[in-house]
Amino acid sequence: MNTPDFKTSYEKQTKELIEQHNLDKAMSVAVGGNFEAAGKLERDLLIQYGLEKNHNVIDVGCGSGRLAFQLSNYLEGEYIGIDIVEDLFKYAEMKCNRSDWRFYQAPGLSIPEPDNYADFICFFSVFTHLLHEESYKYLQEATRVIKPKGKIIFSFLEFKIPSHWWIFEQVLADNRPDKVLNQFMSRDAIESWAGHLGLEIIDIHDGDKPHIKLNDVVKWEDGLTMIDKGNLGQSVCILTKQ
Ligand SMILES: C[S@@+](CC[C@H](N)C(=O)[O-])C[C@H]1O[C@@H](n2cnc3c(N)ncnc32)[C@H](O)[C@@H]1O
Image 1 (cartoon, rainbow, N blue to C red):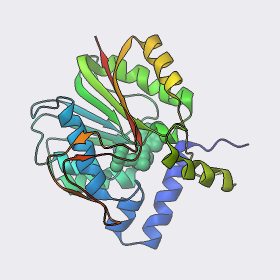
Image 2: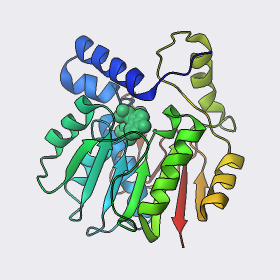
Image 3: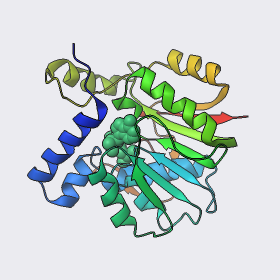
Image 4: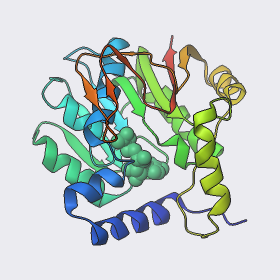
């Protein structure tokens, strides 16, 4: 079976969406839809784990800016959004209108920022599109760039959660060699990787159970409303470096 290259496949998918929809719609669908709802949940998850206004955040695979847009009226510290698809991070930059923030092309699997620089590094729905070796390389980089006691947060798909199964079925049925990869991850892998990297797992949350304390009502495009607590659908893992 062919392994799709993450850059080629994601760029192709984004171009196709831009041809099919108006720009706002294309930019939302390209990152999974629910631009506002997912962004609010991602922001509130970071706040729940200690994000302060003056912190530095690196958003790897920032896409079209679901998180960045929701942080743009909150965060006074530096935000760095990196992504492999230029159409996406340029849109995020335009939406946020924060001339003090940096958006740039991800080199691939590295985070070209100084050691011990960031308070938060997040990968929302990014390891879901990478091979395990690639995700591990990104976590190695995040371990270098995160400050001691800073938080690394990522979301992931797993067989443990019944509501993730339909995504696996979609992958099974999709024979296109250039499809965007949808990768599942086990908690055993996460524990092993954290051990090898010297990271501590603070929490792992089931994607199908509300666990994010909300600062704002979250309305999904299908009509679902979350009021006090919410969840992203994907499971999330929060790690720290001692
Ligand atoms: C499902 S979208 C999620 C975007 C964003 N994190 C969010 O939650 O809205 C996945 C993003 O990961 C980006 N991506 C895929 N492979 C990547 C890589 N190796 N480095 C950085 N970004 C990558 C894609 O271009 C896409 O924008």
